[in-house]
Length: 633
Image (cartoon, rainbow, N blue to C red):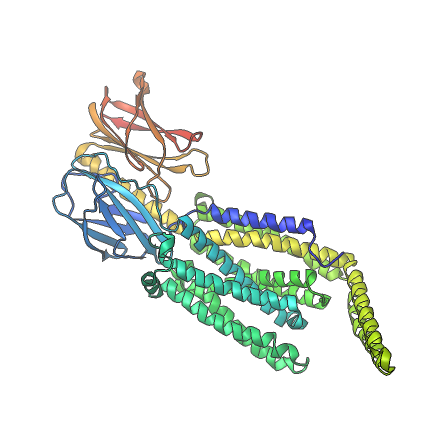
């Protein structure tokens, strides 16, 4: 058994990295963490008189730029005037030109939520009567494209660098102080620092384009960079860079002066490094907490320190695990079983802290049991919980191998200095012989190399050590996937926000429907659908006006679960009056805009309880039919 990683292990690592890449690339644009909960005029409504302004209401505070809100006429020409402004609370507005002609208008918005994520979308309303429009609202650029992918990659690498930096340093300082003089361990921690620093600089450069145009050419726009530095997210990234400068000083002491001290002299320095390192690590963790999920929503004052503890627990556990893996596979210096046992205790404490803080975070971000399965955030969280449970199970196996690690390993390690002294003695005696000193020194070096190789073979032949190495490698593999899922999770709209937005939208829709019904007899039907594809869930809304016998205007709106317009290839409607055995009467509406279909002069031959069946096709092979009854006439 050699110290090099076998081809099978390399294949496993490549597969794990491919899985992580797949998770990151399929994440798509960052999901909105502030959802659109209402608008005036409302989506799809036909108003008699052109409005003076358009206002949008979100689930939380958002940041605006000059181009955050736009109103486009049927030909795609902008009809808004001035800059967007705050109406009050979480409602924002934009003035429009007076006397807008009849037709269908498109409202687009691109803002930044309070937890630093870009939010984009669009909807339509009509003045006088609906019309065709040349505006396409299917391509939401915020958080997408090449810039979005690079930003997601930068987030992943920043988490990975933080975990390796903090966890690796904690492992050396708290579990294996001899590791301060081991080159692979030094390269690991320094590599973590370089990764986190590079990723932070990348995120800072990408931030302006990521929340704005999404163009690669804007990455090096200094004006955009200046604007980013004035935002909460920009301040967090700059703070992280300043703390990384302090971390560089910590690393230089840990692997410099600390390694050269004798064991007794290390005690005071260990305490000082532990205090300083903890402060720096907590500050780095706070740079995430102050700008993302924990900083907004309920109990933010509690959530941010809890998030810091959560991140430190993750780094101590998974970063220490990575350091242990390096010590077992790449280090020439043998790691003592006592050091492995110390890390086992530290890892157990980290898991306890991780579970406690994770339970609180789950409650805060979900708010209900139904959100576990009914929202994307909840589904990803279930995957994360499963991976953590698997990781804990493998860690339990590692603890068993640690307990069984042979004491002979320690005794063999103790013999190494004796052999070195023997070799040194042989070298010294050779020097006293004059001309044969060089030959004696060469023989001594050869003997030392042979002794080292024999020691490695003996150590690696220990089945307990072999089992520990394999279980730790399995832990590290699961940890890589867990980190990828966590990265995607931080870019996903929290379940509580998604459900609150749905409830607010449903209340607004119900109020609008009731008002329309009282005034003109219009009927509105909302139906959820799931075609079974990878992106097949949404809500279809059917409006009949005036919902009476004879000619009617019918509008069909197809939306995603988060309220955005859903660009699908086909919608069909069929009407059946089962009591009179009339139908189905097939209706093929015309596409007006993304997610908006319409048919005029729909003839209802008789009053009654009509079954309205809507067939929604989201791809070439994925479609479904949903239905609901409505009293017409």
